[in-house]
Length: 232
Image 1 (cartoon, helix red, strand yellow):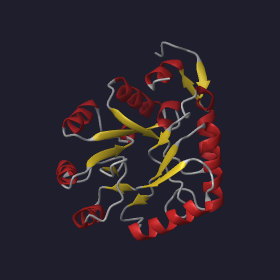
Image 2 (cartoon, helix red, strand yellow; image 1 turned 120 degrees about the horizontal axis):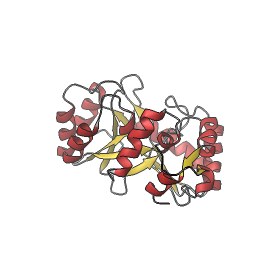
Image 3 (cartoon, rainbow, N blue to C red; image 1 turned 30 degrees about the horizontal axis):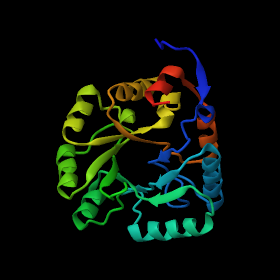
């Protein structure tokens, strides 16, 4: 049961005023996210209207989408040249913990995020962990990076004990904001609220892939109690 019934749209909540989006797929034409420069610029204009301060562009890097750092930096430079607004743009990547990541980690061929460039946004399959997950996370730390787990609330195989174990290992968590407005379903929303209640979320992101979905997301209703958990 939700103790508060009042709902307010995310757009009207003020949550985006000064917000940093730590996870997005706005860099055009590099993964399953935004495909055109026009759409990317449209989303960034909407970010301006909402008061977003900065956004990290975190395209997928995985065996199925083997983006290179050189290519992503080239595309990022093109977006920077085309965008004339006031949202600050940063480039990083969302790294699937697969064999390709292991190779790139060994070579230190990575696109980290954070002001000090010492965090790696990582993900796994939603259904199963990779073999040797703990060892991979420890190797990331040994290289001098903090593992930042993307959308932990969305992993079907993870429960409270898994979150605690990862937290004890020094893994940080990035919440997807759409998780709290039923965009992924009630089960995932409950896990998101659990993580917020436990105060283990380091940062938040939209994980936005398309302009139309983002418009639907910002118009979605957020309950007052979740709004308070988010600090508003």
